[in-house]
Image (cartoon, rainbow, N blue to C red; front, side, top):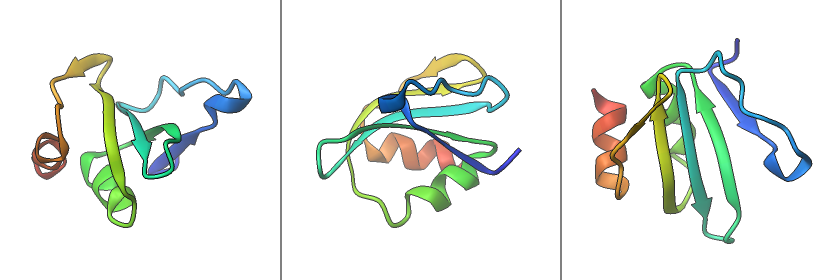
Length: 79
């Protein structure tokens, strides 16, 4: 299992249930994306050079985690 799994939802790819973290988000181009991570630090490293304009949802071990903005996402990734 790779540290990061970018899910190609536009081509019908589904999320891999083996990953404990799933983030639904949008970038500065308005693209809605899904990324999965093995650990919070992997997600943090992945997002370092990305522009997150919207957080759709954050799931950890199948449960939705409250994540209203980047501050909440950063707190999750730093725990």
